[in-house]
Image 1 (cartoon, rainbow, N blue to C red):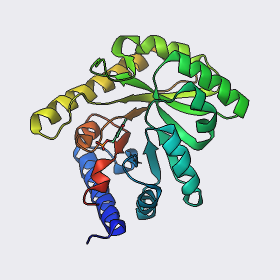
Image 2: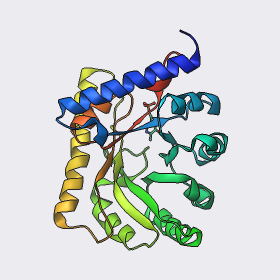
Image 3: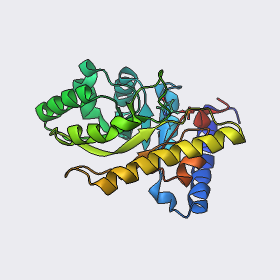
Image 4: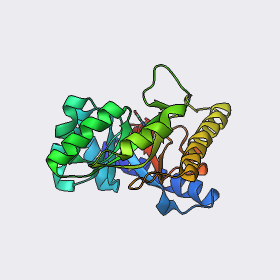
Length: 238
Ligand SMILES: *Cc1c(COP(=O)(O)O)cnc(C)c1O
């Protein structure tokens, strides 16, 4: 059982089971939780095993790595998600490759994405990254600027706001961390609900909540995650 292909396949199937279980426990349908396999830890060969095992959505945090893997795996046509910071000078090359940008973290970037999307004649789906714990070393909009950001970004043609993305402040490998992660995910969901209640600009919806990683995805699913981003868990044992 030390064949990487088998290991990845077993990890994927085990994750799918756990996601289904967490969904059912939360009274939700497993089909309502999209699993993005985060492949930043592995090369294109191992990434290929993951897609062949059944993972159709792949996430990378660096644009360059995403470009390279998208080229190497083009025959499988997975859906690519960029989950890390996008530098404005990398937008043009990245936009045609991705189905969702999770990490829109400034209105300045939104303005550039809008220009590029129009030039490329495409519409880019985006999530606003929210710095849930207001941590200085993390990217994203702080909690209190999200509403204004939504209003501004909804006015840019070529990009379509779909929801919010956030990360819990602690690695949640113990019960207490898991509790805290769950409270933080609840805050993100409540922020979303508040914004929806106040009324969103037309063209703008906040149905998607991208939250939960290897250590805390059950808590995220319990709080309404529609997308989880799982990396290390899939490559355990390689
Ligand atoms: C690396 C990364 C993940 C995956 O984290 P794991 O703990 O390895 O599952 C999820 N989201 C973002 C933004 C990341 O950078």
